[in-house]
Image (cartoon, rainbow, N blue to C red; front, side, top):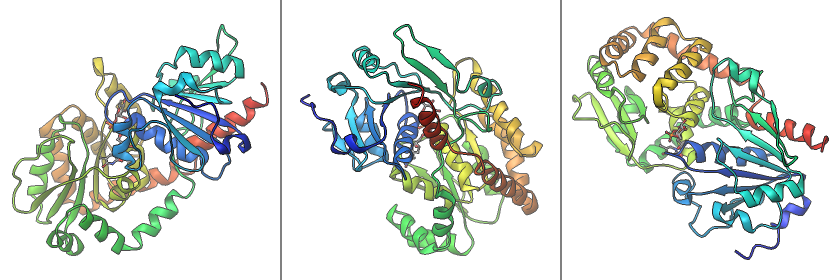
Length: 381
Ligand code: TRH
């Protein structure tokens, strides 16, 4: 690639930040990196060069992305295909290696030349050891300073991704119901179902892995006189088979990331999965169940327990979350049916989700913590 000159704004920015993302599976890696790129440049003058190995996956969350390689995504964010990394003249001041994605060797030699600050951004976990390892250095034989940065749920960690104006935007959006109806109709939800939601219906957003015990949810909803509209993004599992007449299942298209957020805001129950959507469910403040990304040897259940231990959920909600991930249809159905038939229990769940989101929102967010870390360590170069 003939990319000899840096992006126009790079010369005037404080830091050039290289953010490397490999799409391992699904959309979580790019989902997190795309949010992070935007948040690192929001209200700052830094430039981000976002290196991604799978532009097609990225395009699903950000339709403005095209497959042509280098392109400006904003005045401060430039997207590059991963394969172009060896051709840039120099590395950035800061290099973020998201989720241990293994930086290209030649690029690392450019980092040595630049004396870049190397951040190893880890996956999200609520486990206690995360607070002990967050921010630890790993000095490299080539002289580079590499630090581990752990997102997390406590002030001892790097925090969670959250835009500074998130709650304000959410509340404004919720205060204007016309936006919700316009969005649903754009996504193909019929006027009849929008009307049902407007009058008496419950909106459920279903974004899970194929193994989720969705039958438990359907059977519990069938016991409830209140009608339900289930919105499920196309291509996401599990299959929902012919539910009873009080349940309406609508497959909606994959939406750009900001629209994904507002779907969570407007739903009465969110079934989310993976790392990014669960964080957004916390900010939505609606009852939610996390279908955590399955890992070998049930490592994900350890992570799930750690998260539940940090949660304000009562015992039955903790049990529900665990049973959902263990695909225990009977337990899920019993707990969901109880919640649906006891409005005060549902209300408690709703309140605990809302308060947890608000409390977590008091902590500094991941991008703010990273920026502070950069500023502090840039001074020690
Ligand atoms: O897609 P995921 O299952 O990604 C997973 C997890 O992050 C997991 O932790 C990780 O280890 C694995 O990838 C490699 O779930 P997640 O994290 O919720 O990411 C989905 C992203 O897709 C999120 O940023 C929201 C976005 N999205 C949209 O923008 N529009 C949509 O319509 C939908 C359904 C999702």
